[in-house]
Image (cartoon, one colour):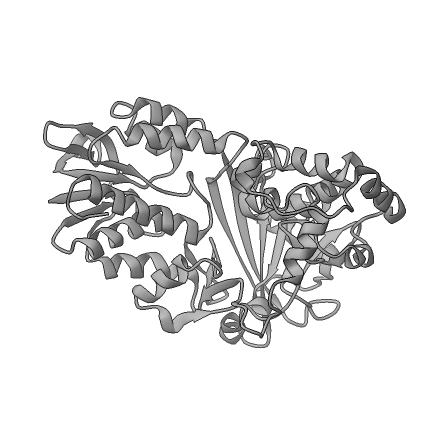
Length: 475
């Protein structure tokens, strides 16, 4: 039996790995249109140091990412961030991030002390008027109809207080994950943690946080990484899978045949026709919609309706003595209402011990994220302008006075799917249509989570379903 996987990002290599683990006798061919594997997991070099210029961390409280790294032989490289805190750059200052559940504050005293809320008496009155201080129970996220994150929060915390929380806490957090906007992102798909808090968001968030074990008493770190960079993961997974990897091999067409599928691979003048029994499509939404348009038109229509946001990562190497004062913490998020170019900055050599060791004491590495959904104007600037914009914000936020030793700009055009209101229904319709097409499965970040563990789980599920549908393994 021969199965093709189209797309060599983390979803594609995971699907190939899962297929071979379940059925080592199956021939698996993975086709990637570019010259390297990895997709949004990518390594670059800044000042001679290897760094992640795509995703830099793995959610550790879900097991799939770290487990796959260990299965691929990278277990010895698994590390965790240093125990340093993050900040919000708002109202002209870096302000300590209070404890929250996806932006819903769990400690109002610490929120007041932080200065993130400008008019605390008015904010408190708004909360009381809305009834948000009453004790409520947790609720099943599925019991709440799908609305935007912002609409849900405002309906529970009141228009004024709710908007303050959306603007100053939720927006920067959602911007970091989705590069999206709280008024458009789906509560059910993008922020189920908030839906699960019930009607009284503040009280439920406080209860949730206080019942968690404090760090150091059995609670696992929230995030993990790999010494040397998360960008090592896709190649290691591909090598561990034993699949046949075809780089620089764009699949231009996908056709159903009487016995399986035909792939048209490569340029028109030298197209190769490949016959396989089944296929997993692990490409971004637009490419997937084009490939399956004939075989699964309803699914193609649904996938084609998913919006994507573009962004850029600017990594800077600065002299460690080139700051007005030493950097403290792991970095900061920026609310869009503050009108800055960057939406987040990570003090990479503060956050990752392995990176501090690699850079040495005289060099500080930082990375800045730029770009939100619907805001492409800034990203149209050339690399030097983006570097200057990031550096300008760093000079204002943390007193960066030195000139960069080196800089790297990585653009991610159309990289982040937007889980807007109605996303779950859209994905359900896609899934139902694909289930009627023999020998076809889909996976990737567009469906059930954009984080590395979620994408890995989605790809593993696609591989298992495909083999089950082919009748080769039991449930």
